Image 1 (spheres, rainbow, N blue to C red):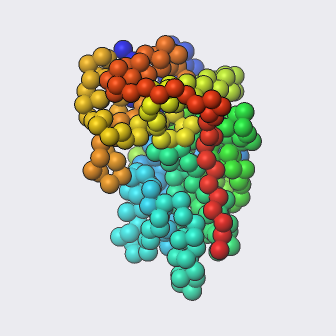
Image 2: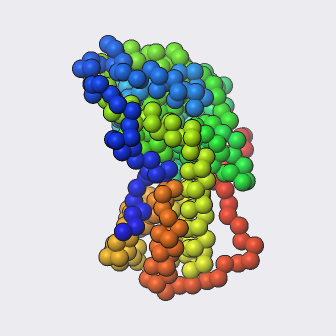
Image 3: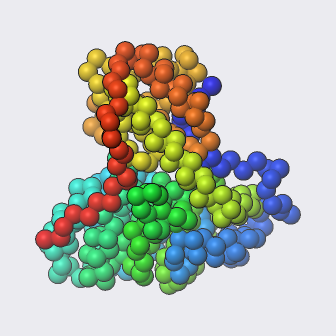
Length: 374
């Protein structure tokens, strides 16, 4: 069976037999009263990897964003949402709507539209909080974070980023030979960004294989989150098992991360090249979520069902407009070249298409979109 449904992009799975041991799963105390064992050491390592002053943990990104927007709303703020934002972050924003916090939406990855909204509201006296995903897996493009950051910096605001998809994959100093960059610190590191205006919330569940929420930012914001966050007081903190797995994930990243990212890139390149050879294409850039582009006469639902009967598991989902079914393949560093080639062969057989690769055809790197400012 070849499974192309898992978002464990680097292949980290953390068998319990290999984890650092713990003496108790939980202290029975909320994090606001006393942090769980190992959490402070883990937070310090995460802050260093991501390039921030401080970091803290949350049981999930739902807990994280629920608390974060509740804390930020203690100041007079207005929230500006990128329309492509992931639902979990929106749930956190919905919490503060009942407190009367003004919320506006702008077209995804469009700093010009955002600037127009901020200019319109410049006399409101509210601190702008711009919220976006760091990377869109549908396109493989990062958000125009440098432009967003410039806009909030000019207005003494915050840029809140959900970087769950990119954490562990993208990192600092990307180049032609290594479009993912180094270290796995996420999209701010990939863009070379830093500053007290940045607040990044992520799950380690994808690149690092640990369902644990992490928040990074300046020390003041993290301190307020730890002391004022509702779930930090009323919910159980991350368990010792999750903290142990996260420590192991960071150790693997130090020792094998660059090799795993290179292997993942090679799998993506092989998959995309194979598609081109049989006359198909995919969206997603070089990100490991690859979605087949529509082909006249090729029914994605039927294709998904036929692949499933061959024990080749894929993700069938709705498009943005929720009208056209999409078929996606989630690639990981642990997929073998044989699995990739067998998938391409199955697609060729089912689609009945073939087209030789053009001489000199090359791949485009993950796109760093930086639209010009007005």
